[in-house]
Amino acid sequence: MKAELLYACGLAAVATVTIGSVLALNASPSAERDARVMADEPFVNWETPHVHPIDVTPDGSRLLAVNLPDARLEIMSLAGGLPRVIGSVPVGLDPVSVRAFDNDTAWVVNHVSDSISVVDLNAQTVVRTIQTQDEPCDVAFAGPAGGEMAFVSCSQANVVHVFDPTTLGAHIAEIPIQGQDPRALAVSPDGLTVYAAIFQGGNRSTILGGGLTMGGGFPPNVVGNPLGPYGGTNPPPNDVAAFDPPINSELPPPPPVGLIVKQQGQGGAWIDDNAADWTPLVSGMGAGASGRVDGWTLLDHDVAIIDAASLSVTGYVGDLNNMNMALAVNPASGAVTVVGTDGTNETRFEPNLNGRFVRVQMSDFVGAGAPGTVDLNAGHLTYPSGPSFTPIAQSERNKSIGDPRCSRRSRA
Image (cartoon, rainbow, N blue to C red):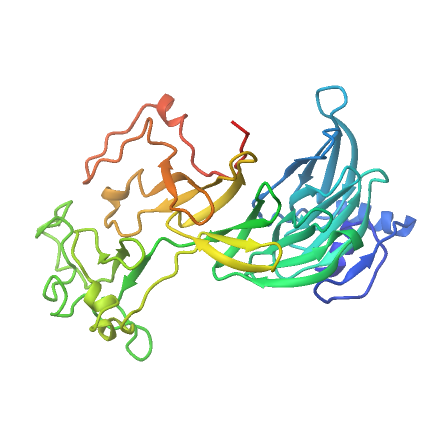
């Protein structure tokens, strides 16, 4: 992969492989030939999603866009109003984000190459390649005036790297994130706080064992436990004492199954899709029956709040989405907006999920304040309970937002 990175950047071979190492990169005729040979090879699509694929230089003169499948940074002039391509710079594999550090320099995040390409926008060449941990996703610049640092999220390592952009990449610190898959980054208006969206934030849902077990009898069959809210009935009902939709009477008895329950906010009760309370067997004195311990809980960390002065996490915001895809900060108020999806994991049976198994949401919060969340499709979609489902017109479907990947705030 490291060799592919160097060829993609149009560079001669260089040896290294430590986190934060800086490679001085100089183009050469032989390297250009290597790049042309690579371009003729079969294309491999890693299906990597963008994170922050477009940016504008501070003076508004150039538009920058990552060309993910071609492993390039595209540079466009905005001098004439409409964007006009003025350059294309080979970078690493699967560039997913770009940020302009100043009017002359951009940092490009290469997801598959595990690196950052520092691009000189005037010379239109990569001047440094900085190694990172596994699968970097975004970069943001923050810190006190005159002391800005580059913060880089690494999704598989669950860390945020901190580099010195004035030296083109000296490694300053590594900030651990208590969450799975930190990706998108944003900065407060004063530049002193970095927000990191945790892609797989979770939504306080967990499964209780009840069907097949692995070696050693784990997880224990707690759904069939007589101390449960259904007295051991498995499968348990989902419509008071019945099933919705009804079970066909001609079918044989159903097999025992597991059951997903969801906590009602931090410290709240663990409830299933029939409003039955499983708390005693999940986090109470009887938690051992489900393979847990008394006081067991799940973290719901959706956004990490990083202090750019101490280079540490000062808190987390939760109860937003279970997949947090993008975030932005209002430059006037400092309010943070997060877009993502939230799965109705606890709902059972396909007819009850048809066309409505996930919600597309937008959440706002200020500082560590309580968030507010809205359904981005609530204006034209309805979510009736039960298996009855009436398809909606295609014109209404066309209004739907299904996979939010970008968020941008204006001053309004």
